[in-house]
Length: 177
Image (cartoon, rainbow, N blue to C red; front, top):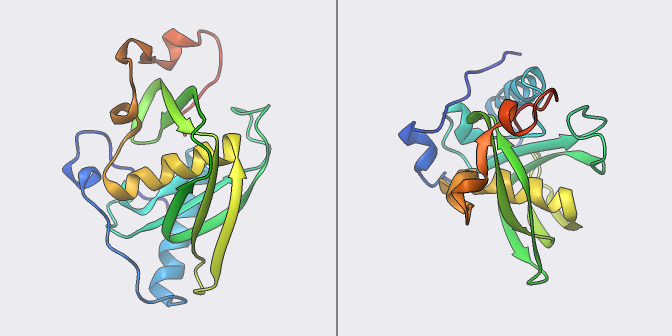
């Protein structure tokens, strides 16, 4: 299909709560998903939320399969998640580096739940119900935050742990998520 422009932090459209999707398995939804996949892959991202391309819908996609930027990350299956609900299963949180296609060139340390359950629907309207941990849980929480107008710097507890990737990780090819 086509790659789309990714909105950057500062754009007011990234700060609103996205609307629920009511119609599944439509030509419009499939075209949007194709554009989202193309955009995510073109930018070497591991996830993308519809609001990041200016579409105010509760829709995220994510996938980690041999991404050179995350060589030690567990594989995360390609997932289309519509109208998601996240439930933390343990109070335990872990701090780790995050980047974002909407906050290009920067990374920050963000606390996230390590064990969650996420529920929602796929593009055909079939129910999704998964329990995940670690990096998979972090990716889902990060992407779903976009649906509520939250960018990762808003989750940071210490802005001294926010910086440009080329300064934080000199000589490493670390892109945005």
